[in-house]
Image (cartoon, rainbow, N blue to C red; front, side, top):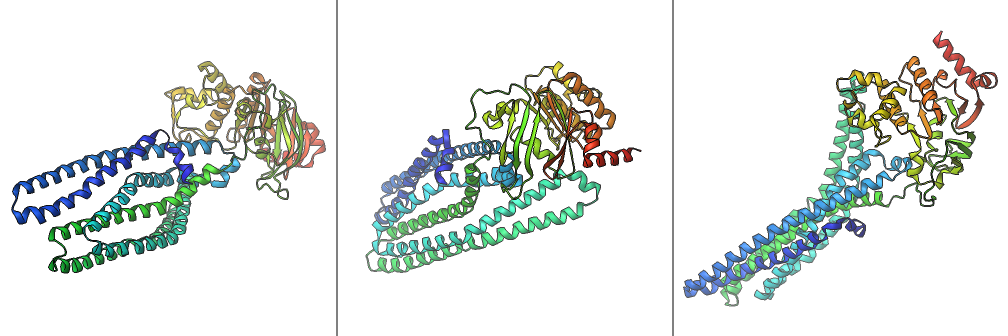
Amino acid sequence: MIKKLSAYIGQYKMQALLSPILVLFEVVLEVFIPLLMGKIVDVGIPTRDFGYILRMGGLMVVMAAGALVFGAFCARVAVVASNGMSTNLRKGLFDKIESFSFKNTDHFTTPSLITRLTNDVNNIQNSFQMIIRMLARAPFMLILASVMAYRISPRLSVIIFAAIPALALVMGLLAKLAFPRFEAMLQKYDSMNARTQENLVAIRVVKAFVRGDYESVKFKDSAAALKNAQRKAEKILVLAMPIMQLTMYTSILLVLLVGGKDILAGNLMTGQLMSFISYITQILVSLMMILMVFVTLVLSSASAKRIVEVLDEVPAINDDAAISGLTVENGSIEFCNASFSYASDANNLALSNINLSIRSGETIGIIGGSGSAKSTLVQLIPRLYEVFSGEVLVGGHNVKDYKIEALRASIGMVLQKNVLFSGTIKDNLRWGNPNATDEEITAACKAAQADSFIRSFPDGYDTVLGQGGVNVSGGQKQRLCIARALVKNPRILILDDSTSAVDTATDAAIRAAFTEHHGDATTIIIAQRITSVMEADRIVVLQDGAIDGVGTHEELMNTNEIYRDVYLSQQKGVA
């Protein structure tokens, strides 16, 4: 885990190495200051040698100033290294998540991935900064101060040296008990983030149903659960500081007791005891630093584990075995005994033995009830999901033979959930083709019946959309998403229930524009309304993840009971 995360230090290795080196110089200067102070007390004051006192005092000032300079530079390079490392780690995590298939994303859930990209990376950043600064400083200080203390009085040093192993044992036990509690706390972070995200995304529904109080209670419960998990985790660690202070201050009292007797017996000088107590203080500060790092490392170890889980996740879909340079020559599609399972379980198939051949340039309609796997079927074409068995062919080749980028570049897809991004309308439309001209964008919008309402805005195509397109209606959002797919000028166009929010007249106009301007593209239309697909070359009827019928509108009206019942029920609704 450490090896994997340390790879993200990258170009900041120099700063990461320089920080402990600067710390070493800082510590060396600080450790010699008590020694000089003792000499002033034991030599300068008894002999009233003011020159000696001034020389030693001046040297102490120089050492203190030098320690300050080294400490300041150390702090600066440590911040640069830790911030740089966290930037690289976030980029690495984001790139990894971008390579995930839908299956991988479903495994982690969006709120959990957000927590790992933010809170967990922050924990790693803080820990890394402490490691290259405080965790370097504390052992140096502990060792050098212990050596100096031993040189002054081996007898008194036994008291301190006996306390340190006992403290280490206690800290190790506390870490073992606290780690699983911090893991549970981070899971509560995920739950609270999920509740927050869900509430903000659906804020209009919350307000429409006047459920603000209800959602507030649910969020309060999530926050309370997180608070309780934090309290449970930190309840263990709060014992560390009192135990350490009790041990160390007890040691200081014993040193004063034994050291006072040694002074009276003539075995120790007053300045030496003062220096020894200063070294005990330095040892105490070192142990306090180690404790702070210890607390942070316990927390960050749980975060590190969660981050490495993402980095080690193997994308369910890859193109390692793809043929380099292979491009989609035409829009033909063929499903050959294709089956799919979200659970990767042959006994729990969402699609079962699909056999369907679609000619290039053909328009195919797909009809079926909720849960019939219509969206799942079309998502196998651009490999958003991978078939469980069988194969899917595009342009005469298995989709696995294409590089993912080459395959998806030839497919325009309007998903069931319409998503727009912050930025101008023109920026959103160019997602389909970053190099599209204004004329191509306008033509696509006219075909999607979006041009007229776009021009009604004061800023037209330069109108800035809010996050998720909150300042346009559902029907307008759908038409913009269709236009974005058309700008791509794909060989295969997939419309997943993408006209459900527009009226029938606009729906008919969009279909007519497709036929006129994009007749050479293979078009697949998933719809709830039969009027949206009845003019298609063929219509596929799905039922419980299997094909129940394929044919034209007239053929299915005569041969397929499901299709006929849906059509008649919709016609009654119209009547």
